[in-house]
Length: 55
Image 1 (cartoon, rainbow, N blue to C red):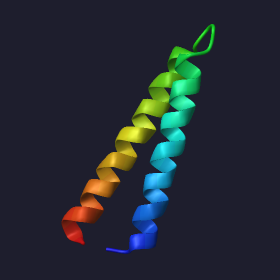
Image 2 (image 1 turned 90 degrees about the vertical axis):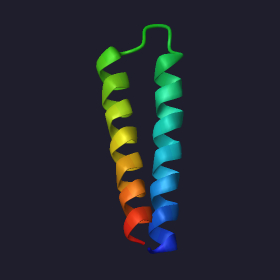
Image 3 (image 1 turned 180 degrees about the vertical axis):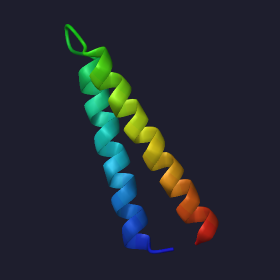
């Protein structure tokens, strides 16, 4: 497992979390944007789990 790759994945996951939080707290949140961000976060979580399993 490449530590710099995992670090990059964690940073991307944190960025998506921040975007999701901002969108959810907007006066009129965009439901599609929230769904897309959640899907991206889940995908990254799956990728990180695979990296850990094969690392």
